[in-house]
View (tube, rainbow, N blue to C red):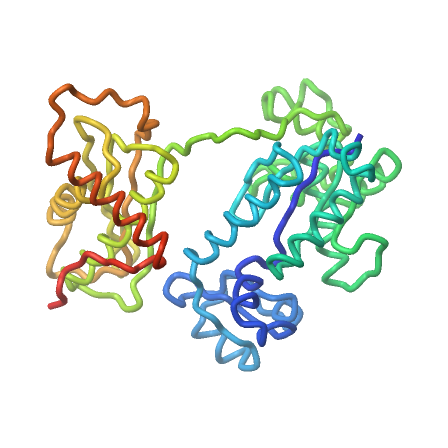
Length: 395
């Protein structure tokens, strides 16, 4: 049965902006990232205009004057993503968040529960998300993750090209159409085939997904290992990669951003680092994790990068515990004569907080700092992100 779904929010960052401001609907809209450095998301109208992804803003605003450019807000997009992911759980307990705007679902048994087919379940999900969040999603339906990913791209293409279908925004790959679709799918469009693998397959005259399925198992195992064999089976409709409905903790959490203007201001850079540190610590607490180490990153105007790091004696998750350590790392990196364009904070060696043994005579000061962080989270939950900021006065 085709019971693996890939739910993909269309032009997600743009869709979020259109949700905030309905006047943007139906217009050529570009969302800007990296302090308005370049285009990171486009509406279908902007794509039709020919605006490429990653185009620097200073070029875009001159070349495509009729487009609307909006500063990105990843914090808001992340909040909307969480709400959508939570809503998907109402359709099946087996939901795997793949990215901020994508999720795999295993709807086995849901067809019987709803007494409708899998493609109708997908259509029901699409209509629910549209009605509640004003966001369009494209949904691929098939027997495997790899095929459902291809199916979602076909669904998205049909919507963009305004090709009418019985289930708009939903497409199913089954045994009847699978071989035909694979013979029309470029190898570089298959999930898991990166740039290097694409070049490798081109050398071996593998240009289509159907060509990949014809490759000898020994060749795949020798060159790609287990992943190559799994991918071949996935394309043939044999499930190898199950939908993971449990939380897999990340290996690290990071926040980086480019400054609005390159600078050597120590206080400006420290304020940026303070904001990054709060965001990574907040994510740690949300996921009940603590960090065993931290890195501070500075990027010069000429794009050279310097990094300083420290490992902690015991895992931490409170910015009040980490501010001093972060500032010390920064002081060792900072050069007054240098000009910097971006900064970042990375925490690593992540451990579930509940697994950490607290000492019998735990530092009272550390307890107070953790309580302060928890209070900060509650205030932001009630009044919104940025309700409180800790920073340094500018020079």
